[in-house]
Image 1 (cartoon, chains in turn red, brown):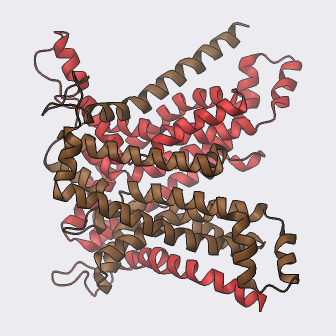
Image 2 (image 1 turned 90 degrees about the horizontal axis):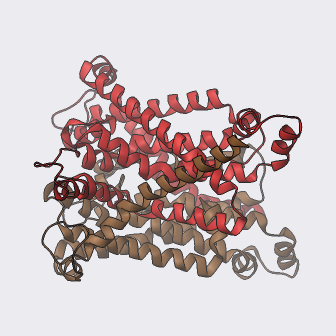
Image 3 (image 1 turned 45 degrees about the horizontal axis):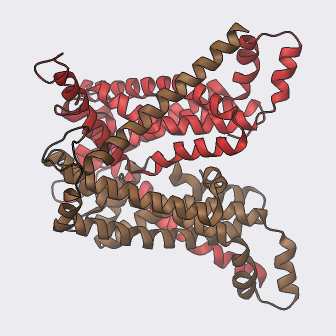
Length: 282
Length: 266
């Protein structure tokens, strides 16, 4: 009786997740293995042609390369700015630490389209930067700051930075301060203590932050489109464009190439940082 | 000693830069929403509410706002009910099945939502799903991890003796759930609901594919305005309304469960 009731609790969430999360993704994979069709969503013949066509086309390869380049730049800047900020937060007394974390969490709740619009308002032809420079008499014609890879990097980096900071700050605040004190007592200076004790102990948070930032960069279609324009497209833009052109098998294959990229980089990040080798909450 | 001071300066300046980069774009949007002019000017010389009136005068904006609200309420409710059921099932279990189910319910958190959007669009096209129901289910999947995780935390912190006491006093499993378990974990359930609401209200990647003509959410309406009609200031008003609603929600979570819960829920 009791077990029957417990299983009744499980059925609704499991059914919805299987039907509207697992099944559509499996179906998408199935579609990616079929030839395109003029009259239907996809043709009958099974083929790997959608994948080989993308992976042998220098146009797509350049886009994949650009996607990885943009993601790597965003990760590097997020880590470089985020780590000291996380450290700062971890050193605050608990009550103030909560408040600062809340201030970082709030922007994450604002829709990305609003935050991207903020950057359009700053970098646009009639944006804050251009009007200020013109008012100061430094430029005559507005600079083209928008619609570039750099604009995408700046906007996405700031949009995703809180994830990195919060992940690392959580690990650093849970860290037992006595490890650092022990290192210092044994004669290590602040720099050595940081490099050999604090940094290695914080890898779980670094790994979590890097994974979140990377995975969200891959999907950030709206930010990439608003800031990058038609000339700075990334892999996710190709998925969207194929859908708009009703090339379903092509769109499906591109989506799974994106997913493969996500898994590959996840494995690399976890292999390099090996967050499980130390105890800590990520 | 020198390295200590350097470290402190580094942390301080990084924090200042980070907060400036994060907050300034949002602040600029909010300030320009109150501009009386037709075009973008920062900072504005005087303030007016004209773009907010314009927002509610525009039929497509108003209906997108209402649809987003409706969708967020329904999707958050569905996600929280499902998440609570799943969390209660898993809370007292160990082993492979519990681990597997937990990963499954949390997976939408890290799964690239753009792929989920394309996948659902294809599925919906194949089975002929109505637009609103399709959007609702997509938003529910995206919100599910939030409802699930906060409730799981509360349920695992619950003393099992309390539920056993209810059962030994003769309450059946359904009565125990409604009279003992839910009253004890309602804070987790409610904050899960509020999180799922916030996530649904700002959702972009699945809605991008699943909105149809006449059925558009506010974030997608803002996006298509920015793409095809340039940055008109009514967009700033729409964005500011979005932000205002989130402030109300966060204040509600803070009143009900305290900010500690907000931090831990992420």
